[in-house]
Image 1 (cartoon, helix red, strand yellow):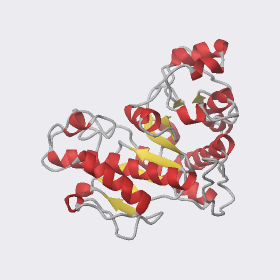
Image 2 (cartoon, rainbow, N blue to C red; image 1 turned 135 degrees about the horizontal axis):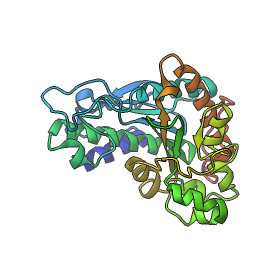
Image 3 (cartoon, one colour; image 1 turned 60 degrees about the vertical axis):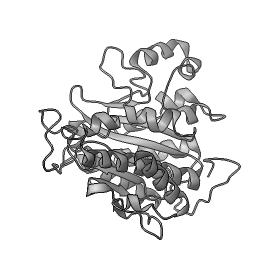
Length: 319
């Protein structure tokens, strides 16, 4: 079922093909996905807001719908509070800046019942309903990736989380804190030689990797320019002694080995104080502006023009 769902959703996103009857509990409209509209997977636990831009925004935690008859997997308060809210806010502001819809995938089940970042067996715990949710979650991500690659030649997967601890934003790119520390002396070649979730960007001709990772036009640097503490960035090029989250399983899955080389991934851990309801709108605007500038600078996407950007097959991502 899992393999069939992935294949069906990806083919549907790319070609608008009909789904198998076995997948009738997953919403696949006959006319194809409409950008900006919500679609729901099995049991309505997963929501996919279809997009037409190169950005894929994912909120695997922070849901609010408790599944009936399924016990908690961990007895603790709901994790990643407000992560879904700022993910949706990012998408709204991205649309306001570019006229393009980001692809958005949201898990509506709280983290203590179901985690979209675990493997299928661990996440489902043998419950068929949760297996179906996992299939829908990753199926919609694959569909979004296929659409982004088909339209733009490349794309960027951005996973939204919330953190406690130090008041900062971890921009996780797969490099450990120690690797980022060592790269201050060893330079870009050292980063290229180490496992990361930016394989497409790392290998793009002409990209200034150090600038893209921790310069003024890196995602951390741009957020820093808006007044937020971020790692890596010009002021904080490496974590040093500070705790730092390098990446989650989904970023490795969708932005490393299994993305056909055209999808990069970033794992965001945003301090809760930046996304409290009274200040979240300001952060969402800053994040969207930073993401758009990052994508325009390092991928060559022309996003703020709001003009249709047909793919140039000879130059993936060069719009």
